[in-house]
Image 1 (tube, rainbow, N blue to C red):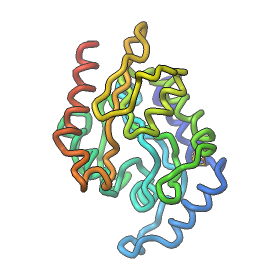
Image 2: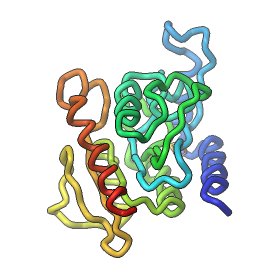
Image 3: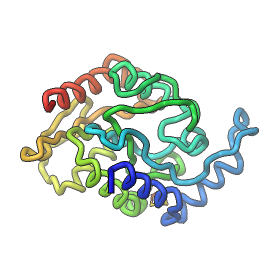
Length: 228
Ligand code: SF4
């Protein structure tokens, strides 16, 4: 089975998933009530699958769908301010064919990069509960198994902590910080790279600037380039 078909199968399972009752109720409620500006649109209102290159060496791990972003459009980081900050950066670094991400059929493709999440359903107040992260963790494990990425870019502390947990890393010296880089597996040559999440809370306050974000993707690129 190719990576493409394995990921396709995985994503079909994710889309059907109803494991977290609270999140299922919330994603459907948001899709029913809608934001005024999008009242004429059909919201996705389901779990949002991963997206990207099935042969990616860079895996991006995000937090969870945005209520009126990917919970509306059905594609990760698509249709909201976080995606409006992420995809232009991926485009500048050569990981995306275009900076725009508006809908599932906007022509966006990713090269050597795949985007997953620690929770595939929108949580109330953007805060998934620990048990919901536990429920969703097998999906992330399977993406990691399929791709065996060289670089895992963790967008935010929660993604970082989940990835460490998955690899059974218990090193107190490994702390989350923007640009922090750790060698995960010497034999496989894989790395974990931390970044602040491109949420409006970070980008509008200047905690995460365009230059800071570009450094992350330049670093990820340099690691995979060393590998070729
Ligand atoms: S968050 Fe993950 S485990 Fe929970 S319902 Fe959504 S896809 Fe399923």
